[in-house]
Figure 1: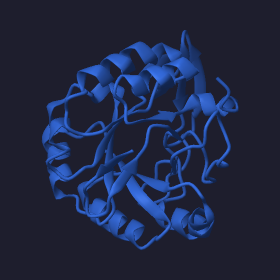
Figure 2 (figure 1 turned 90 degrees about the horizontal axis):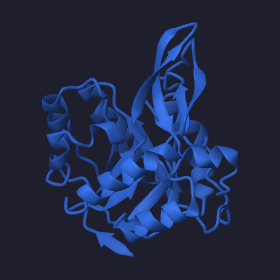
Figure 3 (figure 1 turned 60 degrees about the vertical axis):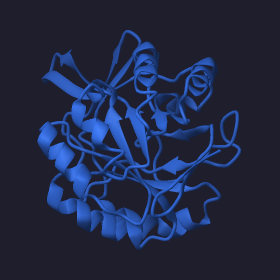
Length: 252
């Protein structure tokens, strides 16, 4: 078990958790999967409620699926109000995932989460349309009494600003599902999150390349076989996150 220094300690042990958005708002049962999960991650939450995309869709491609849903969620305040009691009863540590939409909302959202005693860690995603300067600036400005984990999509892992996460006080880095686009006969081109075993070779290569970044790495995409999980943990991942495999019952 690796113990990390923060305002509160982040405890990470070799094992699995769900990725943000792979499950609903109910933590999985402790005995689910081939070993108990080490944490439960909420769906991505924005400050205000976000409706589903009008043209939401799941599209298959060779080696995976594209999910286009608009990132709909009930908003942070509603999610905390409706789920705090359930999370408090969970035997699994609860991580809240915040999807920042603008720099000004970050402080307010973190303040709300810190009032929820059931939450142990905050995982954060930044909008991909932000510039490198905007992203680096928000990293430096974020402050929380809870450990912060930065989630970066696989297709953004080459960007220089990510290297500032450690100095900015983040405790770990999650390599998450990338964005992609596919042609659609009704809507032209749809953009969404990519899931599937075809991502694993690139995800593993990224894990190896970032192994000396100074932060614990959580590999959070492309894991669809038990051997993939074993390989990721052997090759330096502090933990893994499972995504679309959980939609088929979590059976490898």
